[in-house]
Length: 243
Image (spheres, rainbow, N blue to C red):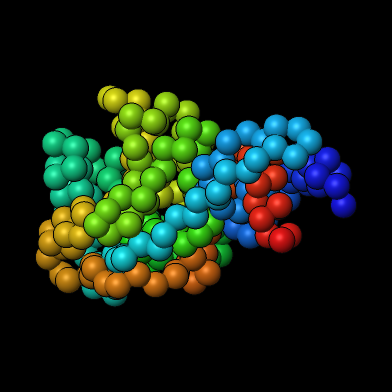
């Protein structure tokens, strides 16, 4: 199959998922959006020289949660924004408690006994997975503003590159991207450079900083991602994985 044929196929698949109402899985989204975070120059027609693909290194650590210990105090949300942003803004926190506090991640439905304070009492903490390659938020960013940040290799937002388009928010299946309306910039968990303040602030020991492990296939997605990048950017993934 020629390069032009593959591009046409990719455009048809993208159009199908955007118009059919089909729930897009993480795997399908990653295929559509390019399947990897790449920094690549545009290729000239007829045999132009390619630049190397850049793949994100895995993060060194991860914050995990024990929901049986969470008391719903939301101190972790306050600690996150007070330390990183110099203001008390729990809705902007990189750890999400409030949205699950009353009914849990799935909300409330007739005939269903849910989670949270109005359900079985279990408060679910939502945390960034520090996704391995391919990284959904990074794939979708049109400005390549999601970068690897040492020393933990956490996926972080480069504020100088972020344009505030919020495409990354539409890309994350777990809705873990936050947005600062004061600066018009996206933000996400970068593990506080290896010393997560949410972990320090938790009074019940419900949060732990551990060596990285892949949790992307163990935690159900909250939403179907709707971010789609250009077919040209997506094509770089198709070409790489067909080699």
